[in-house]
Image (cartoon, rainbow, N blue to C red; front, side, top):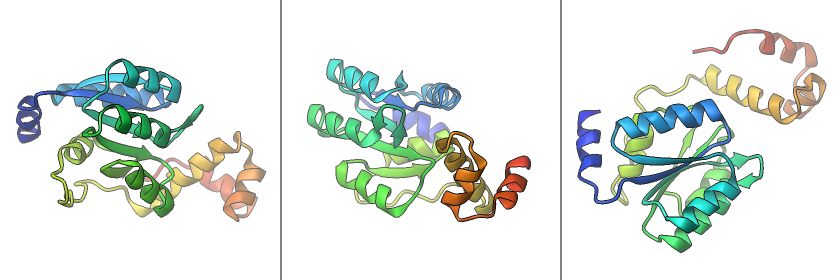
Length: 185
């Protein structure tokens, strides 16, 4: 963390927009990035983020892909128009190749799966153009990634077990057993 903090301290503009509709994650990640030296402004909706960007375009942005009132890609376009050199990282719990490609084409420099570690986010924001950032130090296990995906679909379906099971092409009882267990590490 020391070299990250020193690198961030040397930046002329440390402004950062953090957009996520998950309040605990937004607050926790905002504090962690602030400790590392960024100057975060937190937003919980696409409309709020666009308003912030129009008032003061940030040098950095960490944006959630799917939000209640839209999509983080909408904010990427506004940031790119207001501040073309801004460095943007997309966060998502719905990691797939199509959304990763869309994010990079829109102007994001990296795409990270939730829950993302603050050091991984900072490294992605500070990565040198054309250089591949190092892999995360503590990646999620395959079991955890599966569990996170099931939880997201379950939430999208309004916590309807039958609808979630249908969308996941899974037997309802199997899904109920998975949902009754704790999250894997």
